[in-house]
Length: 217
Image 1 (tube, rainbow, N blue to C red):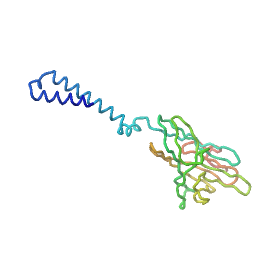
Image 2 (image 1 turned 120 degrees about the vertical axis):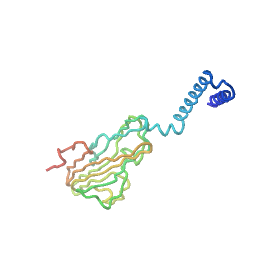
Image 3 (image 1 turned 180 degrees about the vertical axis):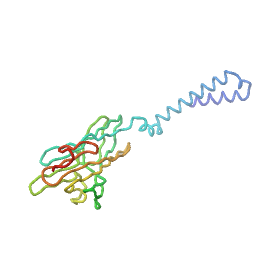
Image 4 (image 1 turned 90 degrees about the horizontal axis):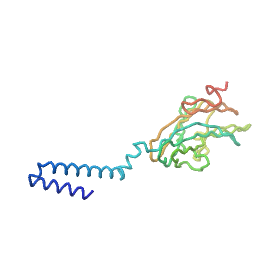
């Protein structure tokens, strides 16, 4: 690129000192040098730091999609959310927090945001590769006689009911998806539980799993 700039300056200098300025040869060489200079600058722009800034804005960035909320029956019933990276770049340091809980239409006052735990990982943050689908644990439904409970699956509830326990009735759980190299977004999960063994959930905009409208009666 230095040679291109030098040739451009020499050509302009020669043109300013002689009638060569008005010749077609001068303008042909000047325009060719300018095109070469602009091409070099564009290449540096894309390959360098500025290029890395615009890469996420031209379709290469990670694009996370929440797929479905599924139930897994083990010692307890677990509800896990599937997440897929539809983009062409690894989604880095993805964390999903529960940021708000609505109990029967009323915002839970004493709640503070807590991070959910990735399935098979005892952590709250992980990378998701391009085209990879992973799961995160959302709810645990403990269905034992005398010990019926639904709780968020988090390492940071501290045993405090307001931070982790889902109450009887209809609840709306707001989750926020954060990632280091993309745009965060929120989604809502609805929960219908009135005690006992029957619990139903759905991701915002999706169908209920076990009922038509979230009601068992």
